[in-house]
Length: 466
Ligand code: GLN
Image 1 (cartoon, rainbow, N blue to C red):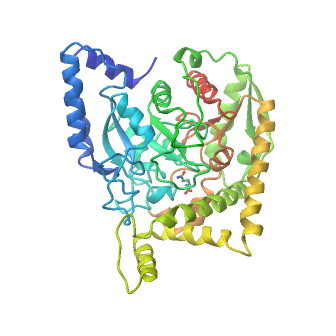
Image 2 (image 1 turned 135 degrees about the vertical axis):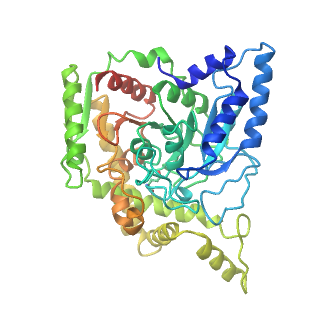
Image 3 (image 1 turned 180 degrees about the horizontal axis):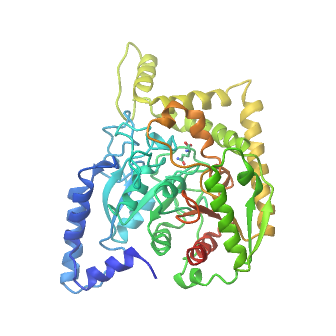
């Protein structure tokens, strides 16, 4: 079974490599920051932790599978004592006071954090260009964007700078950059992993998830991070996903895909042809494939952005310079808030705050915000019906290929539309997994809520089939 984590674990326990040397090698690879993936290196912390792992190995003590494995963290997670900037001017000098639950669980398992990774500021974007640290460059072609918002995390994995990285996905931010850089990226069922210590973008769809080069590595990291957390009331207890349970995929009988996605004018002809060719290969394996009806992409995108903007306007209202971040003083408190926020938030973030406050304001909220909530319910109901008919929904990850660096900034509306295939599954809070096969930006596997195991199982099927 392919697993970089298990492979390194073997090397460490057989004393073929030392943990210090491994961590040092990754830090050296990150240092030139060729693809603009690094917001800050955690070199002191990482080397200190690596020395402890080496000591344990030298004493002949057993180590866990994640012990000594270097990983990256999107710069929106709190890790006590480290900078957590959200790639923003406002929090450029902010240091976390505590550690996010998901990250703490990885630290408890002995994994070694080596880098806080570049991303779109506060998760706002699909290209990782909305950042004060410079546009993230794609791992395959550096003239193209790294994808977003977890672009730095996906590129680091693709380049082998980290063994795995922890991204955040609100409307596609793990799945899309994973697809753009040809690696695996999982958005688990909403609530499977605690959001405590993840800087909130849109709380009703924010998800923590892993990016890695193998399905097995995704499984290992997912299991460690999952679980109910008293600090996040939306979490639920889940069962461990066993390796043997996802290797036998014989019980998957039916797959559906959305006609509207494939027939949309926006889809790149090659992505469409490759997707349909993948469907044929699946059929050839005896799996029933059904065309499903769904909402048009523009309805999905507008529903998602209405709700995401409303939630982010509310979440970011706490960032006014009084408690956190760079404060700019002006003649009175109100003016100080205004100048702090207008000088320190990016254009994209301000667009979302203004949009969010607009859709929530009196006279507009019934027409826009409440209508989006009703549409969201209808989208969820549609999914529920679909999953009585099929086990899996398969789709391309994106309608088009990664844009050139600079293009998305010129046309935010086109950028929003590029999220057409990812945001619906976020609204449904479903487990959704990007695999680097089938099309140039991968395929997206979705199952019913809490069926994360099935999604990983189908990924193993696709790996053997396409
Ligand atoms: N691109 C989407 C947005 O800008 C999704 C971002 C995310 O998942 N954080 O909202």
